[in-house]
Length: 284
Image 1 (cartoon, rainbow, N blue to C red):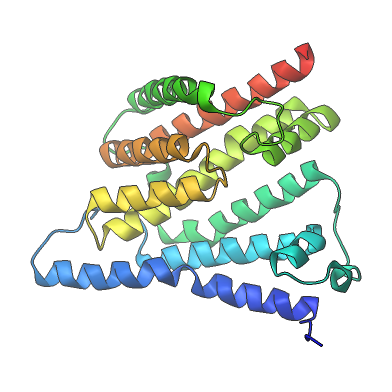
Image 2: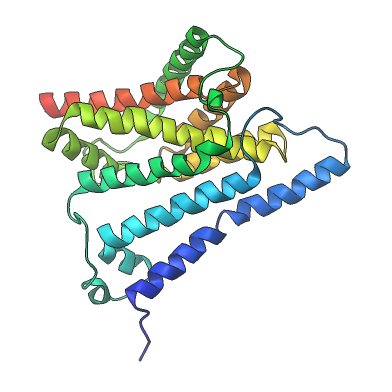
């Protein structure tokens, strides 16, 4: 008979994997950085920012935190992920297991907690703007948002219908809908259009982009962080949109010298999605 690893063992193995997974990106970038240094090439980013080991720390912490939440919130899903008998997980104490909106809140807390881990390593002015004025940074974010929205509208005819089972990010949409209807629109706005943009811009256009660009060219670093950003949104259909948004946000970061412009882009994008969902719920 096949032995079944107990749930706690799978949790510990998953956390160990989370600690190792970011090394698949960090180690090649480090080796490439050494080769570029020997060739006398300048780094893609030399301003204030994070190092490669900060990248490992941030993403290892984030993945491990999400795994722990997954273990307590949806143990049956974790059992299916590992191809195990769901009965083995029925004794796991769950936290608000069947409420997607509360799961979303806990996930937002996990992402935000990652900021506490990485923010002490850089000057807080990186969250603002160094080369542009505040007005120019916010204005650039608005223009970038309009470009992203326009390109999104161009691919909408190719997307599944909004209410179908195959709709991209259907689970996330349902979670935001429940959070809005059972709690408040403004709580949803805070989570989606304030916490998420700040946390994700710090992680991707901050930690990932500056950490990688210290070792490789800025173009490659920008493409890699944008691909990570798009991949972690778990939507193959919308991957091109998220990838493009990540590229534009990275370029805003480079030109403005801070995260204010990409945060503005991200906040407007998420805020527009939340209010569109709220409007559909009211009129539908």
